[in-house]
Each structure stands twice: as structure tokens, then as C-alpha cells.
Length: 239
Image 1 (cartoon, rainbow, N blue to C red):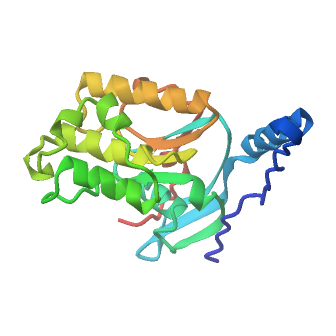
Image 2: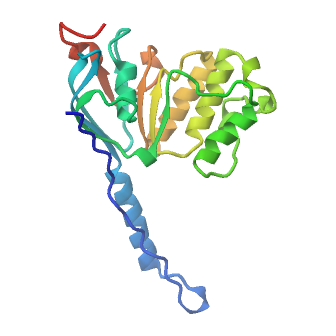
Image 3: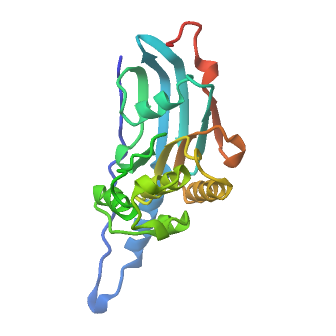
């Protein structure tokens, strides 16, 4: 009970060797590229026989799935079916479960249904906070992508709900993680914002990333797998 496994293969890139006159040994470069390809091939998320509990009753039982590089899982279910519980369990934020989970934590970006922004700070300060957590250089690429870069000096408390969601998405996804775990990421976005996020998710999968998301907007994305949590609920579940 309460077993959780988070692991990824330990890969070491072969060094690029330089000879006289700085000539590059292309044989070693080929080996490096092969190693990188193998690293992508090993990227995966798997859940086996997962049962999550609330108030000592199962929210859902015996959920299993496996995702590889380039795949997207769309999790659907009625209110209370356990969508948020499942994502929190994947991220190690809940210990009330049975089953096996494999997800590389250092490769994973998570955004819950709350935006996780500090309202008294500006948009720019919040964005820098996300990147500093990962020791990354400051970049406003996704703030520009979601068209909120002009709000960089504006306190978050003055933003609309849609703008806050865009700022939160930009911060979480700018970190360069290859696995995205997103809880209702389209909530609060206008149609253009939804289209921009759907395109970003599609591009991430095309670059061999993995996306796990919940949403009420089934038609907005193009998942490779579906998980209907209502099918995994027993007659006696948590309220």
C-alpha cells in the first residue's frame, strides 16, 4: 500500500572529442545523437492498478495507463470523479493511494486548477519566480505567445481570470519540462486563448513531449488516449 515509484534511466552523453586544429570527431557526435534519441524513447509515464482514497473510501479503483513520448492523455469525468485527485497523486501531492506510478519528477511541469500566482507581485515578477525555481535564464517567450507580455509591470491582482490563467500557463510551461500535467488548463481562457493553448500542446507532443490533462473541452485538443474516470468508480465511493 502507498507504493510510489518515480524513476528514469540514468543516461550519460558521450563527450565530443576535439583533435588538432579543433576538428570534431563526427563518430562521437553520431553516438551523442543516438543517446539523445534513446533518451526520448525512454520518456514515459505509467500508472498500474491505481486506487485513490478520500475519507477512507476509494475515489476510483484500478486505473492503469501508459504514455510514451509524443502522446497526450485526456482525462474526463463528472464532478467528484477524481480528476484532480489523480493529477495530484501523479505529482506526489497525495499519499492516500495504492498502486504503482512511474513519472520522472524532474521532467514534469504541473499546473493545478489554481494559478499559483502571488497577487501582490507583477506579472513579470511572478514569471521570473517560476524560472528562478528551475535556475533558468529569464525569458518572456510564452508571455508574448499568450499576448500578456505588455502586462509585465501590472500587479496580478488587477488581471482578469483569463489573463491570470495565461500568466500561470506561461510560467509553468516556460520551464522546458518534457512532461506537462495540467488540471483544467483551458478554464478562464477566451476562444483565442484556448486555440493558442491547444496549438502549444500539439506542438509539444510533436516535439516528443508528453501531456496529461483534464478538461471539459474535449474538442479543443487532439489526445492520443482517453481516460473516463467514471468507469472506475465503485458503488461505494467517497463523498
